Image (cartoon, rainbow, N blue to C red; front, side, top):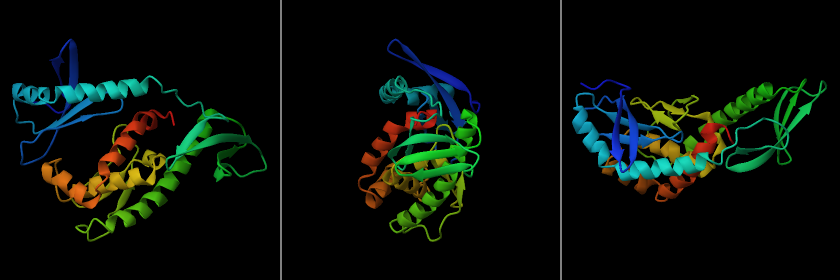
Length: 248
């Protein structure tokens, strides 16, 4: 029997692709595959499926998996870790802002978006402190922005009768998730992406209240509610590796 987080692999040409088994509680024996921006392959599956059966199913998507890995590997080549010093660029709602670090005992410590710059004031320059202040600022802004965008998306998501409870959680490979009871969890890093991409993630998660798997019906619901969702997803995917790495 399969084990949760077990590592399996298969051959694709001269490449050996490893994937991680993620246990899925479902009455349906459907398998879902995800390639994350850090070039990991995760396969959600009921654990009662035989290993050979699972590997055979994953191999059917081997070309797509390989192509996704190639895309993320290419993106990662150009990622430069942030140093949190003046002159760097950081994103907020899809727009690029220059970071300005100010050492001052007169100004209150914190972050302001001022005249096209992200201005960070602190008593003594320290890159770790700058990073902490920026992350805290992003988290506060994320709470406000996400709450507003949920209300916008709910105008189209007619199957949702109550405003979902919102929780922020730092995640390395996910934008968000939605519990069966309707509680919505979003990654605060998502606030670095354009609002149209934020709306896409919110709708994606809310659609799972109707269709728990990425079935044909799930994508039909997405298309009915947000006809251009694929373009929004592509835009977000192009930013994903940099956002999750901290490069932007």
